[in-house]
Image 1 (cartoon, rainbow, N blue to C red):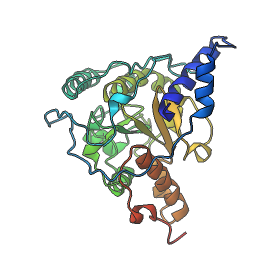
Image 2: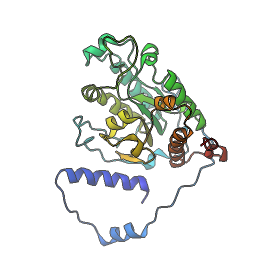
Image 3: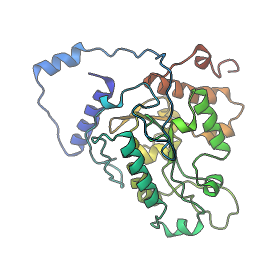
Length: 307
């Protein structure tokens, strides 16, 4: 049994527990297998990345940009965040072809661009910030909400924090075109009476907007989601545990592994702190290892020399 399959089982059992289930029947054979099987640590893959398949312009390809086989992952749908007010279903059981993903993502984009559910955000926004990248990628980055630069350009993570994220992705020997980037909120949170600055999304705004992100996750069907900052973690997992304690530990989410890490803006505020940079980089190394991406000795040692 693979570790990601175990996470599916754990998620399913946690859901059943919320419904009052206390006991389950298990066969002697399964019980023996649980005790006999040992998790084998993954080795770094030396396979080279293939060309990306951006949903905006590129024709569909039969292969993903990453070496993992997405057909191996299955998931049982259940209610998202049972203790949350969102209660949004995410169904990853239906596997989509590359061309189907592109078609569905473009249809979703057209719907989101017309969204008027938050009148106060509709009045203040310049653009709906949908998301960008490869819909066939096993890796998804999710932030909290657009800032002023993102609102102006209609693209996530293009400001100063976005430049940091782009550098992190490049250090992984990837590019923005080879991953998918989105936010919990698709519109910039309004800041009445302020000429600059940002604010985090409110719970009501996140509840309203999350179904759009859920649809994006259903279409991309990533193997790993990197949750950038506390707001993204809370939006995905209904987790209020401090990000400093959660980061570096994969969290199960509908058969997807979520890696919480610091938001790039936190790196901006701690530009000379190599310990913080190394912490984020170690999180990315775990993501790379899980996806069986090649990791060089140079990459392993980033941000070690000046600690």
